[in-house]
Amino acid sequence: MKRLLLLLALTTPAHAERPALGSPLQQAKVGGTGPGWAPSQAIGGPDARPGDSQQAWATLGADEGVQWLELDYAREVPIEAVRIFENHNPGAVVKIEALASDGPVVIWQGEAPKKPEPHVFEAAAQAKATARRIRITLDTNKIPGWNEIDAVELIGRDGSRQWATSAQASSTYASVGGGNGPLVELQGKNVLMRVGGETLRGVLGAQSNGFVQIEANGRLLYVNPAQIAWIAAE
Ligand SMILES: [Ca+2]
Image 1 (spheres, rainbow, N blue to C red):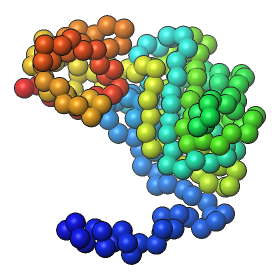
Image 2 (tube, rainbow, N blue to C red):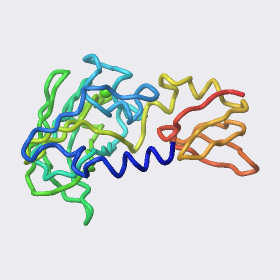
Image 3 (cartoon, protein in one colour):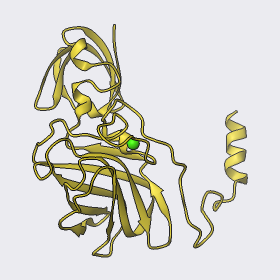
């Protein structure tokens, strides 16, 4: 099998996965994955219904001051615009940064339109930046209620359109038990969890400041629930 893979690697042209120059790159509109309201729900194309939806990212609390969502894309592009699919209480976005390899660049800052949900907020880049990662900052006190984001499309100056391939956030409502088995129900129980490429076995503790405690191998660890790939009672 190894020999076959090597052979394929040698015979596949280097440009095989690259789109033709100038052609629009559009990924399939597949919605997010993971626990309900997790940052990963903002991966892929829009799939949330208008209003509160588990298919969108939501912060831990409804009105929790400044919060952020970071999104990664497959390909680095000169950024033309960012389209934010706001399914619940739109208008809280205050800043968008391109996290370029040589540091963050503010590509949009201002007063986002306050529209009825759902709303697609298209922010045209106010500064030039080339990146494959962006950070969206929200002032969640600005618009009452949870300000949920379903999907974020990155538009390149080369005409490309991309959906996010991974995401992380300052906090998430998923930590109080979205979709993947309520964490509160597992408190005090022996669990097996996969987090940050490591498998932990131990007793799940209480949650504080958006983190869950786990006592594993004699260590007390604090885990960001958004980073838990899976968790199960033993
Ligand atoms: Ca979604």
